[in-house]
Structures are given as structure tokens and as C-alpha cells.
Length: 171
Picture 1: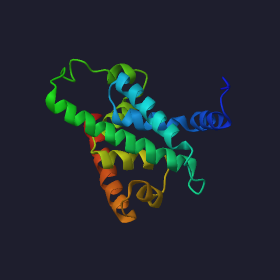
Picture 2 (picture 1 turned 30 degrees about the vertical axis):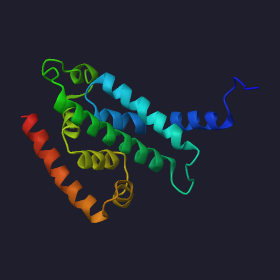
Picture 3 (picture 1 turned 90 degrees about the vertical axis):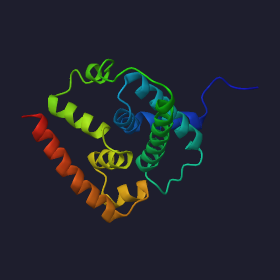
Picture 4 (picture 1 turned 180 degrees about the horizontal axis):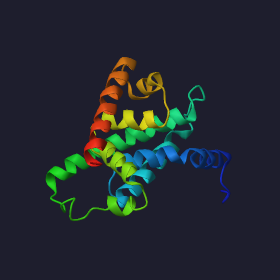
């Protein structure tokens, strides 16, 4: 006889997601411009987190585990969408720009930063997200499978690009 009540594992999962949902939304926001795409990506990330929740190893921080899965799902989704774009002609981004509606209440600087992050290559985007989350270089390197010095070099270059981008746009 099956029960309609959530199992202890389900309760624990929901609690974990509630406590760390910001990670999921930051990743989705960085990898998707369109609100519907963001929501789809959030659902896919949560699904993949659920699939791997039983195998979560407590030797890693929950946030590290969630970032790793979220970024992997987002990058996979990004790759699928790139292939799909090759074979389907869609609307011009300028004609259907949902990001302005989503960003309506954000300051101009924050909106420019968000757009800058969205326009970066997938590895640079992931590095920026993790850095803005307050992760140390070594943790970012471990999460993304690159060297710590590579993270430092890329972050230095990205900071310069951001500064120049913001100066140019805010003139």
C-alpha cells in the first residue's frame, strides 16, 4: 500500500532546494534571456538535482554539489539550443526581447552587468557566476575542472572587460 505522504528523502530534498534556490535561479538567469526558457531550465535543474539527490556525498558542500549540477544542466541545455538554432529560424532578438520586461525594476548598472554575463562564453559565464557568489578561486577551479591559475587569469581579464563595458555603456 503506497502512502500519499512525502518520504523523508522528499522532505529533505524540498528543504535543501528551498535553502539554496538562489543558486538555481542565478544559473538559469545567466544562461537564458527569455523568462519561459529560464523557467524551463529551472525545472530541468531541479529534476536533475532530484535524480542525483540520493547519491549526494556529504563530503561536499550542498552549494558546491548544486552549482556543479546546475551548471552542467545549463551548459547542456545551451548546447542543445545552439544546435536547434542552426536548423530553426526564429524571431530576431530585438523584436522579441523579454529581458527588458524581466529587468524592468533593476538598476541600469545591474541590467548592463546581467547582459554582459549573458553574452559571455559558457566557461567565462560560469566563472563570473561563481565569483559573484563569493566562491574562492580554488573552489571555482574544482567545480569547473580547470586550474586555479586559469580561473585567476580569466577573472582578471573578465573584470577588465566588465569595467570597460560599463564605462562604455554608461557614457
